[in-house]
Image (cartoon, rainbow, N blue to C red):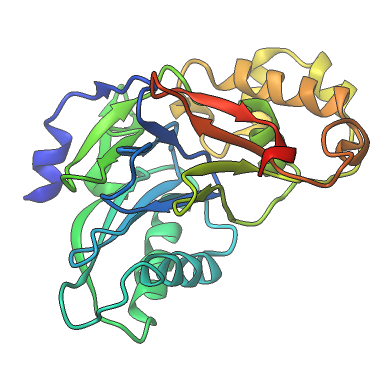
Length: 283
């Protein structure tokens, strides 16, 4: 019933004000007390799943975008991040919302759904499954081709409302963060709710293999080889991958060009509710 209700809602466009956008293999956790961030969100999930874990007592809310790379470790990580804000175990309960995936040919969505259910089931604490809108419950068919119905969601950390969403702005440092994922990064926490700062990096990788070869390929080749579900990707998938590959070509050694001082790039919300970079020496 809950999945049906969620699927019937049109995707809302979420503007950057007060938004913390979470990319693939990233997570962020905050509470209703946060003065900078009121919405956590992520989109462009095809076979990936977006997970929202919330403690009803403290209101601590975590959103992550899982791709099946190391599901068990990722679930443990988000569990401990939410619990770190919930110091009174007596009041409230842990609730989880799973959204994403579809009936893809390679059954990657189904595999990830199973991994997530198993990982939450293995937790010592009770976790209550509240929203389950994944794989076959998030699938639509058009001319024998399957697509996800919902590609992205947002959660309002103050009201706990969850809704389908798209995000015109996916920054800051969109290419840098995507490059981190493309080079095989583990799940990374990008936000410090205590200081209300977005922290990116420091990230390190070596030259990306065959980057020139990939940049020479046409759109069809990139789509076919660098997507888990070529027929179901959003229209901007190829341009996003090209932009990330170009970034990797320009920065083969981020320790020299991006993070020479080994410090993260730090952002805070300004008066307008938009991210602004903070000089690291001020911290």
